Image 1: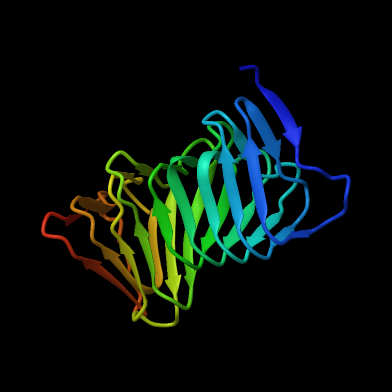
Image 2: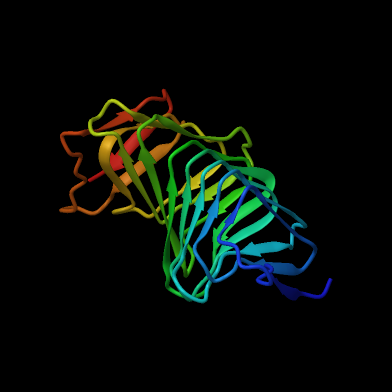
Length: 231
């Protein structure tokens, strides 16, 4: 199918939606408007495998979703010219036919701030030419989960900042591949990062490079086949 672009409608001046559903057909690219947006309910991406819902790229803006972000099918794309911030107050879910990724070109660093859980059955790819810093924050425990062994996660960085002490956890239990850089990708500020995958977690493999955990943070390796790797 030929590729073509479609801008999200700007004919009415609105800065908020009750719910927003983006449906990109094969080869279609639907671009979010160049403005800060507030979605009071859920944002849902449905589309063809080659259909793309593209975040704004004209200037740096913030997309705030008070409910859930659901990427059921198609692609939700962070682009390569201006840094965007996406805040999700509810849960974020990428289904097996879905992809959430950053652009292969450029060198922009975006931010995805999650207060709820992250479920991945498809593809999360945040460590391309343009990157996405993934942040778990808020005042309740979260899970990074998924049941599809064919799923894939590729992170540039993950910051964990829950609560004010080490009592709140982020449990990482997602199946499939989980790829990170070898150094400086995980930052624990508050709360306990609980690695429950049956694979290695590499925090640093460079002699002389420290991995620090503050007094208000914690790290747990909680799987019989898991181990940590650092120099």
